[in-house]
Length: 118
Image (cartoon, rainbow, N blue to C red; front, side, top):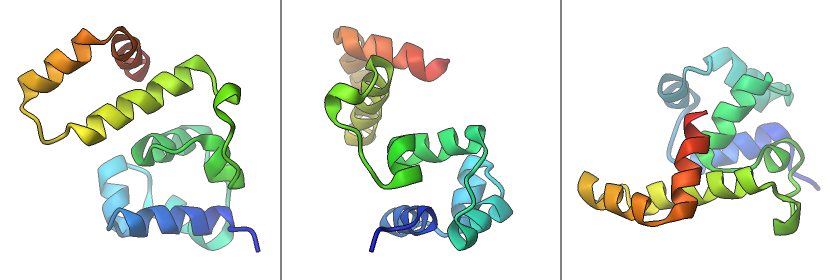
């Protein structure tokens, strides 16, 4: 049986050791919104969908449908956003200067940072 939207969000919270309350505090997505998604499979508003997907580094397509797009179906901006999240996740324990140097040595990461700021 295919996993529902609410089940996918609940799994992401569990995998990241977060309660809906903690996630709400970190993202400013209301607890009631999170509850509606988890319990009723309510589709979140676009702004909340983006916040959730960016936080967990998953695509909107996957969160909503459970289907991941093939690499050639993903836009360049989505690829850069994913790359930047991976760098941040993999290097979050480095000193700020090391992260700064890593980001600005890579042209793709410069683009990703610009996209994230939009």
